[in-house]
Amino acid sequence: DQQVKQNSPSLSVQEGRISILNCDYTNSMFDYFLWYKKYPAEGPTFLISISSIKDKNEDGRFTVFLNKSAKHLSLHIVPSQPGDSAVYFCAAKGRGGSYIPTFGRGTSLIVHP
Amino acid sequence: KAGVTQTPRYLIKTRGQQVTLSCSPISGHRSVSWYQQTPGQGLQFLFEYFSETQRNKGNFPGRFSGRQFSNSRSEMNVSTLELGDSALYLCASSFQRGGYNEQFFGPGTRLTVL
Picture 1 (spheres, rainbow over the protein chains, first blue to last red):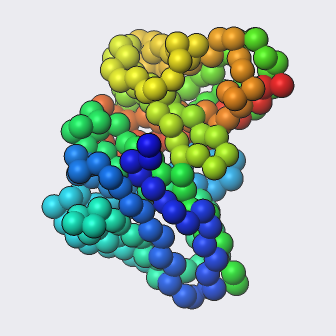
Picture 2: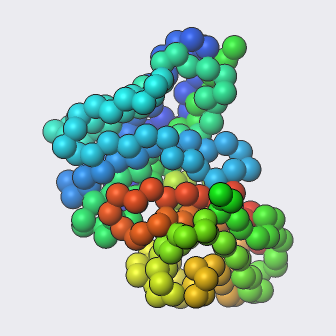
């Protein structure tokens, strides 16, 4: 039973346009959410996070939105760049899971020049 | 500051063998977690070590084990390898355990079981 779901395995976007990556979760005990980016042959690197007390967090070109009632979060990348091409993992954690992050299966983003 | 290092980077084993993977955390980090990533799957949590003690364990069979040394370096061992154990094994370190501490991942060890 997947508690964190990324329903789109892949996403293709033109350079300069917006990339929107989506993530849904089922466990209401989750109160902290993270996005990681992973290039081939490298480990995931932390990108941005959001606490459940917020509904938006921004860091440069990256913005994460959280809709608690829908148990949904999204990562917006504006403008998208070819270097953003990577696999993006959504993760969630909270007291119920001893703060061990639960990861989604990832979305492969390809940004075309 | 050096990042998380994992050795070896690539490993090929046959069914029934055992394997030991090593992880050196970022200097000063005391928490080390291990994850398994298989194609099309997210990162599946294996276990977490802090101060040489296993603090949390994921839903994996007893063939998967680990330990942490006094210098915070960690090893994980998989005995009686099965084909399904072929995966990328990732180690992550953080300064403290739990809570909102950021985890830093190593590049992983790619294990292939033939």
